[in-house]
Amino acid sequence: VGGRIKTWRKRWFCFDRHARRLAYYADKEETKLKGVIYFQAIEEVYYDHLRGAFKSPSPRLTVLRQTYERLFYMVAPSPEAMRIWMDVIVTAADENHAP
Image (cartoon, rainbow, N blue to C red; front, side, top):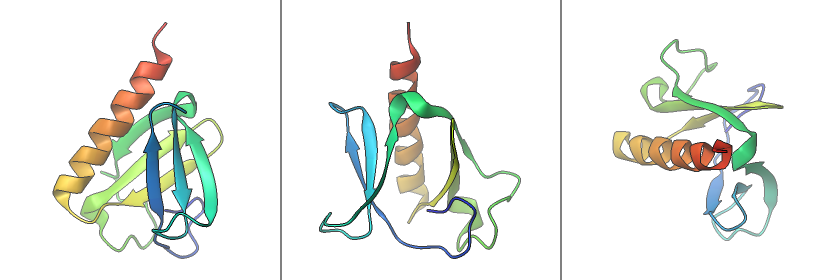
């Protein structure tokens, strides 16, 4: 995950449908909360088809998530994971933008 990418770091994401957010942690044990992305703040989710993510470790598996405040870059561990992430995040964002 990266904002203005200096280095790529692993993060553990927790999808919380009830709280309507994605929380991300520094570790799998979820002991160090690094941030929260609320579904209603997500404006767009798309593949990095222009290869804009600086030094992505896997450009073909890079996903961008635009919020009101920040652009997040994520690299999935596999094509299947990337499709699942996209579906889940887009669905959550769409549900929270509906009137």
